[in-house]
Image (cartoon, rainbow, N blue to C red; front, top):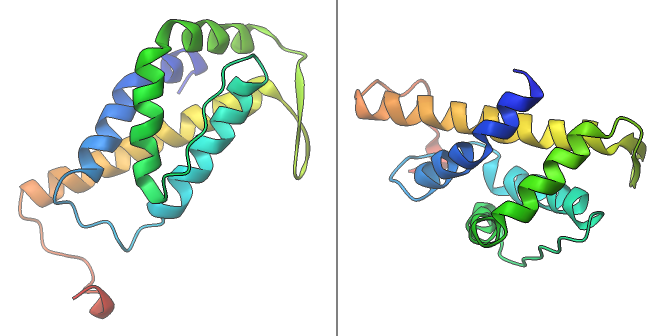
Amino acid sequence: MEAAALYFRFKDNLATILGAINSKLEFRSMPYHVSIPLEVNLLADVLRLHGLDFRSETPGAKRLEDFQRWFMQNEEAVSEVMHRVMEDKKAYMRTATGTVLQKEMLIRRLEYFNETAHTLDVMMTQQQLHSPKHFNYPYLN
């Protein structure tokens, strides 16, 4: 998906992911309780470089609720920063593993939220259609 489309769908993707997290969807066998807070922190790192400060100590996937609340309060500023980062083809940032383009880091985060929203949406649709489980995880019973 094109970067502009990822940016355009970001708000809807957050709503889809939070809808799935707060539903009866069984996703404990998925890595979202670990990956969502990491991705939120990485996105916050990009935004922090441009003066927007989001911090949350909420554990697990619920950190996304904190981010969405903060995002709704600062939507205009976040949109402006994201647009500026998308337009800048030379700005770099240091990470624990090296140096990357800010634009690339932002696009990767937006792709993650897009893919996660799509996956959880498919899982919710399967559950609503009463599709059979593909595998019964004994430790989840």
